[in-house]
Every structure is written in structure tokens, then in C-alpha cells.
Length: 72
Image (cartoon, rainbow, N blue to C red):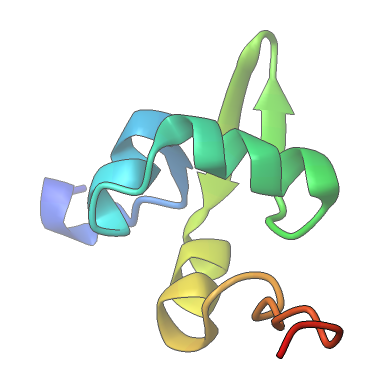
């Protein structure tokens, strides 16, 4: 099987960071811990599925933060 036929399905956190435009690994971990990003743990390592990265690229992650309403 040629290497072009092998599809990459999981990305490490540093590789995910690079694919998402150098989002910090710390931010990725925070979103994983909060449940905003789905991840797969293999041994002591954390991977993000390519389908999840595609979802993030298309729709983003989390909810936009709103301003405090009491301020004028």
C-alpha cells in the first residue's frame, strides 16, 4: 500500500496545534478537559481525531463570550 493511500486519522496535540494555526497545546488541553474537543487517549498520549479537527476548522470550538451586562 502506498503512503498516499494511508489516511491519517489521529493527530498528536503538537500536530493538531500546527494544523489549527498554532493554537497553544495548553488551550487544546483545556478544551479537551472541558469536553469542547473530543480526544482519544492511548497510553499516556492524547490524540485528536481528524474528523474533530475538521469540525473545529469549519465551526470553531466553544461558545463566544459575551460582555458583562451590568457595565455601561
